[in-house]
Length: 253
Image (cartoon, rainbow, N blue to C red; front, side):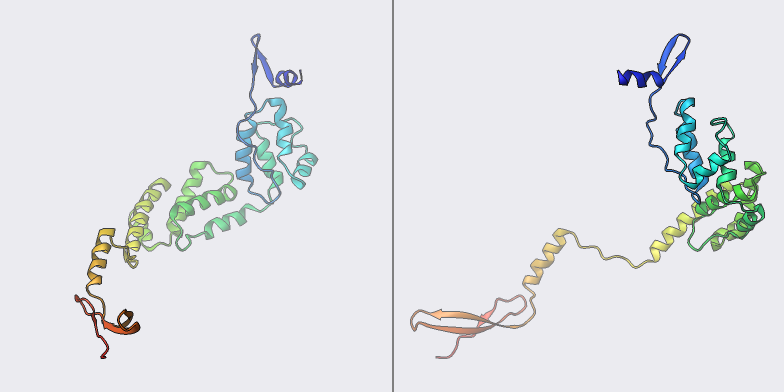
């Protein structure tokens, strides 16, 4: 009975037919805390709540805010009208630290390629900063800013030489060139590294062992022998010679 009741709550009626919406098959995002990466949380949460019924979205969205963040949203009445199209923009405005765009622009312009950093990672960071530095620009206009900063901020000598010698027309073109150059440099770097010793194949090792048996270094050894006639035990020295069997030196009587 109880199961039927919950099934009815999660059903939508359309054209005289009842359609039951299954619960989300993906795990819910982590709760947002002040200081977290809002952009990543908003992207994950937006995809998640779209799987829910409209009547459940407000409650679930509020449950994905933790502590101070939830208090701010309630005080600002962000969800008063439910989950609207601009809800994440309004959440972003009140949950992110208020920093003047000029400061973000300074971060963008001072961001250069780090030592050993691939250009792809450099571009990802520029794109993230550009959203805060140039919120009024379109995606295409921000890409132009990023392209300019790639030319200015690239520090890998080979890449910088290529970028300054041939004009770049897009970020995608810069990444294509970078992938080719970085892959080649990676191969050359491995070639410069000392060769790692590899064990010889098993049959080679066996052949070497057989040779070593007949090429043992000279050394003095002793062996104990018992004489049945005199009932005496002798310690006899012997010497191993290369490619020769050992010779025993019997003690003088």
